[in-house]
Image (cartoon, rainbow over all chains, first blue to last red):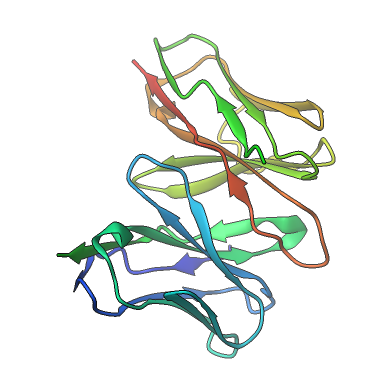
Amino acid sequence: QKEVEQNSGPLSVPEGAIASLNCTYSDRVSQSFFWYRQYSGKSPELIMSIYSNGDKEDGRFTAQLNKASQYVSLLIRDSQPSDSATYLCAVGGRYSTLTFGKGTMLLVSP
Amino acid sequence: DAGVIQSPRHEVTEMGQEVTLRCKPISGHDYLFWYRQTMMRGLELLIYFNNNVPIDDSGMPEDRFSAKMPNASFSTLKIQPSEPRDSAVYFCASSKGGFRNQPQHFGDGTRLSIL
């Protein structure tokens, strides 16, 4: 059974701080990794995809991947109250499937 | 571009009734996925299709659940008979194929309540 583990949180950070969200996965052969943001009552929205070891930056977001440690993280710089949401880590599997973690709730206080 | 379109957005019905959820994937996407989301279990993959063909339905909880994809632009998820424990948010997602996993794009979901 492929597993994707995330701390459920909530992770509380003040406005302007860096939020660090972490995810570990069990399937060593996984090659594709995604972060989704889900606001309460809404659908998951893709933020970042990452396929290679290292960092990938997009605006205030940085995804980090370490396949040897089976670890993916998402950094949000200059956190804003509008970033308050649940962040889902997703790991690619066979036939374009994704296995999702249960998500980490982020709360950014003004 | 139109995203994934699901209907209805909300459904409230009584136990034992048939429920049909509908999904229109993004044009050009050849994978379609049905998920169920609850607080306890998170996002669970129920079934997925590739080029309209069901590939894996091992996530379908019981025989009361069935799904079809008669063409590239339409899919249904049916629950018959429905039970209160089926209450959840049901999402449809679609993605392109490729040599590696492509991101999935989600519809707005159907919030289902079985009384």
